[in-house]
Image 1: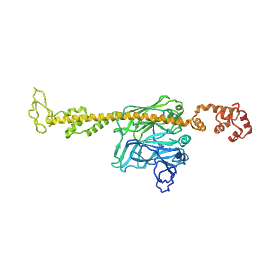
Image 2: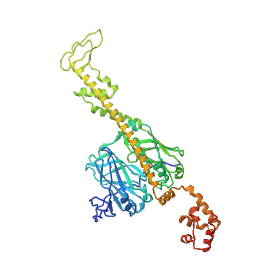
Image 3: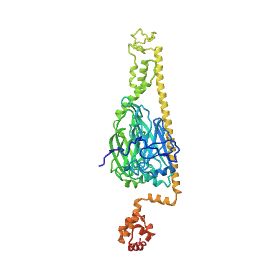
Image 4: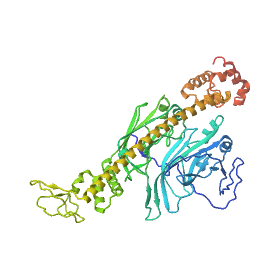
Length: 557
């Protein structure tokens, strides 16, 4: 039985600047910046980038666009050769992207490694915790993780999330390479008081802790990329409810050919440091279902469904595919109780009244319905609003007598001017609270409308991009088209041709030449039909008798 496992993201590495005093390399002629960058090991090239910081102060987005001219030196880069973007701003912090097209270590040679470096941070800050997402728009590669950053920290995606060979295969028709980075700051810790929290981005517990159903339906372009995925290539879903996303490695991450799904935490509810979560993954297309209970926090934010659940070959047979995950939080009751108290404290601080006693009573009245009895007068209360028949002389707080009216043995209710004023203020506080709630509801409606419009624009943009890619593929040369078709040919469809060639060679007792035919591209009947003696000699078949036997039996094939 397979087991759920914690994702350690061992592919991530921390890079730091070196100050050993080596001489600067002249910048690339394509680069227009005047900045000089020092390096102690590998040369750096500074490339243009086009950015858009569309987020609020705690979120940001940046795009690094590498055009065809700047992409050419990347695909011929040596191992540990580094390319960097210009510095840019996200969340009022300075960042920089770093790329190692051919890997940053000898072990990662051939991996297109991408890193995000934090260049500047306020001196009072000790570290920040953020949710970061990397995406390559052209190859659909993606990665999301929760990480801790200090100044000069550089973190990337795991090795072979994108390969250099993948870029080379697309260079004939790909006009540019685009990397999109999204960040959301979750925590800011200070140096003082041993890491005191300065800021936390916490989710509404009523939304975050209810049972959530995530459905990641793969569109046809993404499904095609996943079916062509190589070992360790990763993909990432959108973030759902600001809290969860899915990571997928169709061809495996630790074991080749093993379809891997991971659940990634992207945010925590109010007053919550750890969640015990029951989660279940369903893939209806292949009838696979598996579930676990695991603890999620910012230190252990990602869990995978284990090995042996689904093979890559089974996945490739699917015409449509949806990954569904049901998420249930075990300790919901306790967290909701803490959230209620947080709301009570927040509203108590927000309430306003002229006198301290009136302010306290108004806050209690507006926050807890069950505490209405606190406002009933006591016998010696200077703000009494009710007196009995036996109380013949009562003074208000300002010394003026209260008007008493006797009616049998019933309690007589009288009000001074100060009491009336206090009640009016209490009603005004309630009106202000209702008005604030109304504004919040209107703001939420406006945000929902904007979200729907953005979704529509995003869908339109994706359709236009897909149409543009289709148009580019239609106008490429015959050679490129043939190459593209060859790379997309299904292995099962071509197996019949190779079996036929192998049987043909076995019939001539020359089956030991089968690998030579395959290596030199004679892997179908049409290719062998035009074979010549010169072709056989170049392949390494030097026996004349074998030449004649093969050429004589070509027609039989």
